Picture: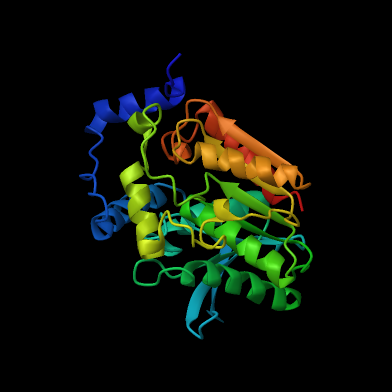
Length: 317
């Protein structure tokens, strides 16, 4: 039986098409990272503007020194009444090449406000201007900074998680691998449809028709991050966590992906290998869901279930 969209998501797509034609930017050609960045950031700007402002979450900005001495900005999202001792580093999506914390501001504030868990969102550098290792090292710098400043922020350093979505999910996984290897504790990793494997650039005919993030887009993002190393034997695990040979010693892990997402197989395999290494894993594969499915309809049943699961993962450490 062929794959198909979740019925409620498809109804929302059809309603949007009937209302305004659902105009989308012209797809970017493979390796045209500038056009792809423009498309992504146009979409992100629209999506975030459609979310409600959260007056119950305060923001503060900090400058954090990364591995090479460059300072990156991190935004601290504090829910009303303060946290309960836990916190998480958040790494936004954007396929390694696009997005900023500002373009995800309301989304991140909603996670903080709805969970009661403060989030430190790192404005990591992006490829190709800053290829690997800059993005993942910026993520690690944010984690290390939060651990070092935990007491003044009211955070228990033993209760810090790392969360990321899409490209940020891959960077979150890479950050956690670096933390394990460098001896920095992480309480949990929360990976939402993570971008994990640079070798995933040839279309799967069963998934290609549904790809909100296409195989050409995936090649463009990975090529920008890795250059000529893409797909070759010398890609570091911190850059593409699916390359990691050893997945032992990681924190309890939450992985979520849609069955129509081109990241489906790499997400399932990453979760499977972490479980085989002796770590507790929670894996969700949502039937009928493409990449970024929660942005299609806020009230579809699968979106409500997914949202509840993410918030539960954020409050579980």
